[in-house]
Length: 315
Image 1 (cartoon, rainbow, N blue to C red):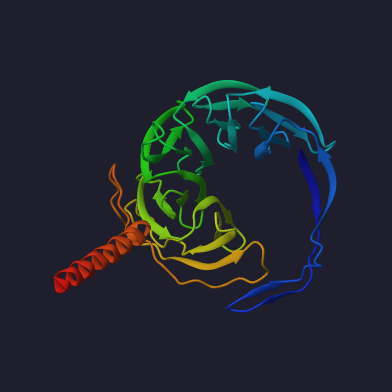
Image 2 (image 1 turned 60 degrees about the horizontal axis):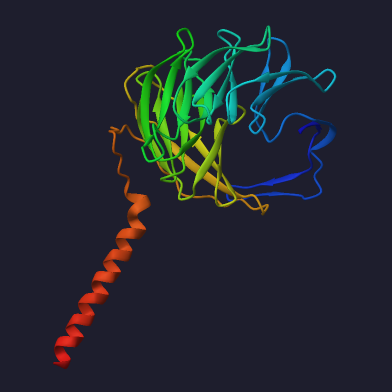
């Protein structure tokens, strides 16, 4: 079911350098309609060409087309198996749907509300359009379940993959940041955000979170990126706009400015990190996710050594 609501001005907000607090009584919107669509609706996109809303139904293998003037479904489009997300491409007016179950990306022509092409990929999840080069970027779990995840760049003119950028295990959310032209990818397997320069299609930085990231979105009003995590938090990331127009990987200052628990009204400010140009190979090692394992091994070694000394002394 799709829910429609109106937004209204909210109440007072206390804003300081260390915390934000919100009144539980703030009324920021009103539900005005509930629209019946397919089973388990997931991704959603607005199409400015016809003004319709497109909703992905992951368990119905369809996309529902909603006319917002009447809040009714005016068309249902069959796509691949297990569709997840959808993105609008303003360069050709098409919509692109990732089908994780059938390993395809369906291309929808909104003029006729039908699939006009299917792009063969492997285990696609999220998708984002990059206006700087016109490519669509798709996150993939990997070529098979045990392989490293990657991001593919798809040229909509040919419907072909033109680049693969390996980012580590279990990538999911992806967002484009117009302030510096980079793409930000949530990589749940190692609890980081990878930063991709689409001019050269390589990873140029890493932001360590400590929590498992899922989805990510850019806010043009303040330039921040917001990341949902497995610890019931939303992490807020600030990325300084790029001052260079060069296509080479430039150093970009990136800060995690706050972590907001969803069950609380208090925001705690975290430490600042920075992203630098890095080289990614087919096997990526990052120290933070394995630190706990190394500490545990060290503790075991110390315990065993002490036990051996005690045994020798008793003899």
